[in-house]
Image (cartoon, rainbow, N blue to C red; front, side):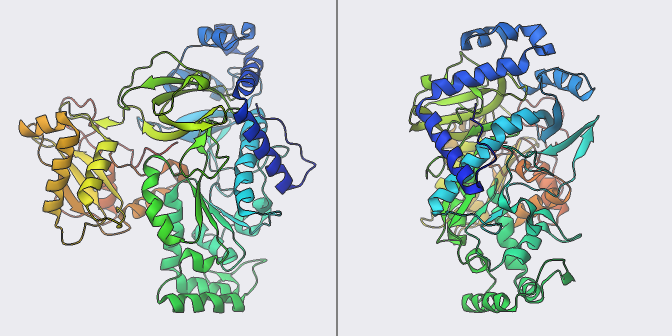
Length: 578
């Protein structure tokens, strides 16, 4: 459990202290895990969960494993429903004050209890440590309200309700609890706390911060950085005018002053570029971009480097609604060490990311570099020995704590006929077929299409030079057959039709993201995936006018499909850490 940082020190000192504590915990992980176990027992003692499992008598991790079974989310839902119904002391002694929501693999949202104790003792200190790294690497001794453009959470979102409890996403939080809860200098800044009705929030933030001393831009999902760049490109003229006049969308805003000199500098940069403003034009002091950089999010890296060539890139913590898994403590691009003081962690080895079986659990110190593991996590929010369904690979060590890189969801395959096509196989086949060194892959996704015989549709925002869709499809098909023997067998036997390629205009997937955000989805729930389990993204693209052609008969869910074909499910883009 993280040591309390205390509220009497300055913000920058507080982040430095938290980072130092995190690094020290990585050096000696066993005491940190022991402290978490004691805290879990304390939080569960006297609850309904304790009465069923005998938690109060637990003294060792072996006792914990013997008393508490590993459970997926659906097995916890009856307990959470009791919390929603108003029952007291169900999972934790500190009563939940809200529910955090995230998309489930079945399309039904998960609801995860969150308590003030958990936020003060775990999540808040973790965020101070994470941001302490960014400030340290930038050499910042002080942090001002305009130092960072923080896109990682939103104060303005209005929560829904389930029963008497508010419900919101992990990146949506209206207020700070004070104490050790994350409360940065920009918490009350107008650009962060206020929005202009009817105006895009990101554009509002640009009007406040363009040509200011912004040193870093931080998002959870890299798709949000894509949207920021699109706002700059699409609204360069609007932005220059609004900065000049002190307006947002030509509307006067309290506290926002006119900045004609800044507007002239922005206009000069756009003229020198001969086109729309880019991120380094809007923020000349920009030195660091932060976002997820593992799993399919890594696909964005070439684009990010072109967008801000002078900025370093660091990962955001691997953060789920259920809790934090890794925390960056150094400049490793994709993998942070296990957040050893955030939860009690267990791992079960997997030889194949598609293998959904759960074997014997291992402690963090028992894992091996190069191997992949399924994560089991116990958090002080009441999710005890929770099967996350997420796969991680151990890529090294930070002190005596494993350094993990997110691989994806365990069992994320599609299989009409037993081919068990995986996301990594699709990505590797497209990359091999791309064949253009130095030219980054565009965004793409593949979708199962139910026909007789069934097939896969690959939708991609561009093709290599002098290559048509038919040629590219043939090359991807050949690569898939080489990578997946079952796919090759089903193709040669006629049980699968050849893969089709449909070329989309640039920005098509971003348009789907924007539509989902406009409909109220939390940014952290919108995750691009190279292989879809259903074809709802096809319908989303068609509804936005991005995909023409005849109507397709689409599978309801490709994996485990039986009987007649159904309609598309509700999931659009899933697969980056939740």
